[in-house]
Amino acid sequence: MIIGLIPPPPFKFHAHITQIRTSINQLLLLQMSDHHLQLELEQEQQQQQQPLLVKSEDEGDLDGCLQQLDLYFLLLGFNQSSYIRFGISWVTFLMIGVVLPVVVLLMITNCLKCDLYQVQGFELLVVSSHASLAASALLCLSHNLRKYGIRKFLFVDQYHGHVQRFSNHYLQKISESKRALLLWFLPCLILKLVREVIRMMYIQHESWWQSCSILVTLTFSWSYVTIIFLSSCLVFHLVCNLQIIHFDDYGNLLERETDVLVFIEEHARLRHHLSKISHRFRIYILLVFILVTSSQFATLFQITEFRDKVTFINGGDFAVSSIAQVVGIILCLNAAAKISHRAQGIASLASRWHAFASCGPDDASQMRFSNRNASFEAAHTLLRSVSSESDMEAMNYIPLPTNAQLTSYLASYHRRQAFLMYLQNNPGGITLYGWTVDRGLINTIFFIELSLVLFVFGRTTVFTTTN
Image (tube, rainbow, N blue to C red):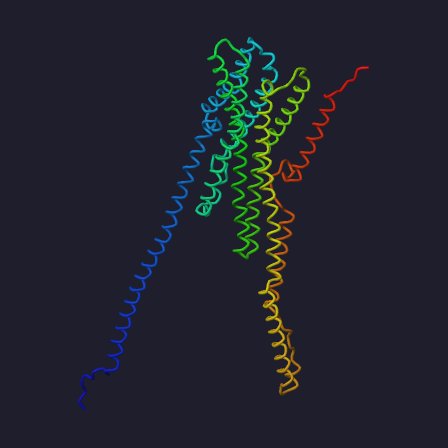
């Protein structure tokens, strides 16, 4: 027998070639998949870069508006971040708001008919009351701005992921505050100018330029102090309005989300911010309320003790200053009551959401469908146990049917109920040492002030009869 080289079977060679082709195809597929993955990653990066560009533009507009607001605070003396600014701010305030009007009022006593058309006690009382309010505004707001900065103070940097949505609303609220300052200040300024012009016409000084210089000096000093006071009140009003944006968004969150834990976390964060606002402004609000009330009572005592006739010429500053002071305290109380009632109104929105979720048609159909499935499963189990072939199989334990959908429905119902109870027990709002500033507190303050005014009138206004 001749033994030679026997070639391998042809099918093994073809199998080897097939494996090589398969490995090459796998490599090509991997390369193609890597290429597709790179393309997808590039597309995702481009999609991520586009909103970032929009966010940077929105933040740029907001930063520009905040820089203008910070410059305005610097001009008024609220920005006291350094010792130099602190000294310049208070020296400017003392010179323009206190020293300048007092010196002018003391120098114009030697004129014709000064005692009839200008009462020095009235003028000094107006200067002291306005200077006290402006000093309290400078003291409180400069401390907060120095401690937190403009962005943290206004609570516009707490939502890094929401700036793109809220930046337009922020800009709108800041613009509304600027317009409100002009809207409330200009009528008071016009009344002040009219009063000073009328008084200049009746009081004759040595020369006309002296009368004009006195008019300009007193009007400028009054305007400077009044703008400081009204600006501080509008800052508090602005902070509350910026929080109203987030409470409105929280109401829309109830329509978008279904997770109760998300609602509780968001509400706890909003309540925390309201507590911060209350803590930062409570001393200022109390000072404004006390100073305005004491100023009104001092004005009342001055007018009732004055024996001569009180006219718009000699007592017009009382009316103008009272209007400005009342406008400031109304702005503060209105903003506090508005944000308090907006926070308390979340409970009513949650109650409606809970009622719709509990009594809606989807849940009713779901419950009917789940009960129908449960009855079908129970009937099928019963028939299977009856038609069994042996008694041992019939004696087996048959578990009761469970309804996972019913359990899930009850669990979601109890979660919503617990969330509603949480909102009812934690309403939130602007508080002053435990008292929530709402309409109830404002009505209480009004009646207390009314009773005190009537008491002062009863003690000072006395009618005598002659026999």
